[in-house]
Length: 317
Image (tube, one colour):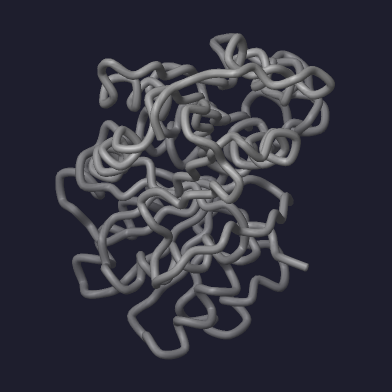
């Protein structure tokens, strides 16, 4: 059994804080009862209430004073309400602040439109110097938190609500630039490129039906990481479908399309519409057209959906 991303974050931060007294934990009214960090280190835990911009500014000052602040709030309030503070503190000042943003995408569907966040990649990727990550599963989240603590560099880490997928395996300390999931994959196929929890779940579902399709999972999606990823992708494939829970504007699909001239890059994303109904995460995703059927449609005409023979195709791998 694995932990959801936000739970894994709290647990990992509490663990590494045992050996690092400079680590601080700040929450914007999300701490709740029984926060493990607050229980273990009450003098290093701060709940600032609904004051996200102030929380980022406060963290920047603490970083200047030699501390390593980790702050957390809902993704829409971190990336949008506090956007100016992110730009000035993490961008201009390069403050060593880590922002952990749960409820990204439409994972907080029951809370309504104010809690949806389909624009955070666009905002954070436009701020140079910030490492942007969308971990998939507990192990990736823990590794990214350790990376942020080890490097002391500005990080924005996106996660969902309660989903607890199992991370893809990798070798080494940090998640790789491209984590290849290509056992049984064939040359010349369309390469699936996944970002985040929903994108990776959809790609894995299609891979179970068509193991011949290669899958490249990306954890880090800031510009420098995407430039390295694009170079690695281009060495192996010519055709890609990027799957992400984000709008097309400023998303990973649009970034890779610019970084892969001459290659075919399609995107399966949340589109440009505003979700206007509440509901479960899956219900809101279906309303936006971000589901497995949309991924099969994007794979056409090169790949047939389940129940029909796969199309023959050529290409390089």
